[in-house]
Length: 287
Image 1 (spheres, rainbow, N blue to C red):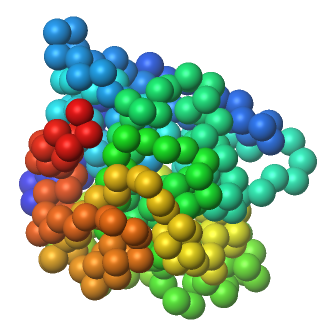
Image 2 (cartoon, rainbow, N blue to C red):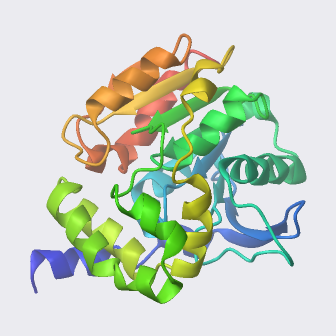
């Protein structure tokens, strides 16, 4: 078995998914959002909820090591956004823009009655656009927000920003080989990262991808980052990551008032148990 095949097999199984409670929460436009929740292991509770919003199309096993380390002492809320296969759209015309994605998160937090003073948010890549809206427009105020490889605009091949709006759905699906080639050739630091991205592509519901992408592909959130005030924000950069440049991470850190910057070197490190260990150290400043 090749290394690539072994990687694919290893990320097909999610122990966290098996341990978590699955729910669908109906939000204000009638749509239903899939969430996974767990409680901290008895005797290890730190009193905080870790809210994880994964990136574009990301499958649960991509965060397995992070989640299985966090489950030791955090309550966990894992939210799947509207481009995911799990999303159940409401009746009639709905909006799938960044504002709506942010409202989904706020409404779920309110539905679960989570104490935001005891909440840590963890977002990555595409989902940092959502946290920028949540924090910049004062929708939520967590104790700590950690942004991995933040972006100011949806990261996608340039040409697809335009063709997404005009081509029929079956042609969008036909672009999958291009996306696979793009992430393997230009946007992956190692076979593990490539395998995660490619599995996301293989499991993609392109109807949902298109519905969200055409709403967000030209949205830029620089102003929202600049409007984040009185929040403890830490940006995580990855020097070797090809998808999320270290320059962009540092530029966004500079845009957020009083934000801190930490470089974890690789995308692999940010998706490992080490990420939670870093968060635990950061939490010493808020406890």
